[in-house]
Length: 132
Image 1 (cartoon, rainbow, N blue to C red):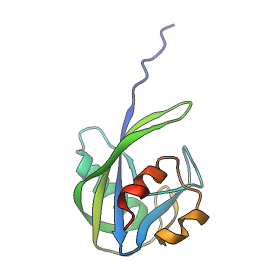
Image 2 (cartoon, rainbow, N blue to C red):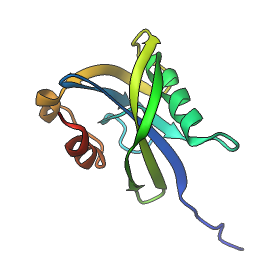
Image 3 (tube, rainbow, N blue to C red):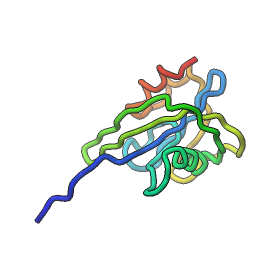
């Protein structure tokens, strides 16, 4: 029997900062369930990374965003999965904040309060890049 080839999975995230707050979602499933991160997810076949990023924010938070430049790239590697991640800077342009899809919760969190939130492993590096 042949072992299937394992390849990294492309993923995107969107970093929305409003003054001294950052938009975070609590993961309801998958790797790091219960941890907090910027909204994001997998890129679908045939979908651009920017389209995937906008879609994921809307699905998880109900918010619409305009995307800016890439602010972080990296990898999230677990025992069973390897994600290659690209995070864009985002500006909220509309919608109503409400957790949905695979987000158990969605909220604006003050940078000073982040110590009280269990964050996904990649968030520490990202926060240092975007913290005002």
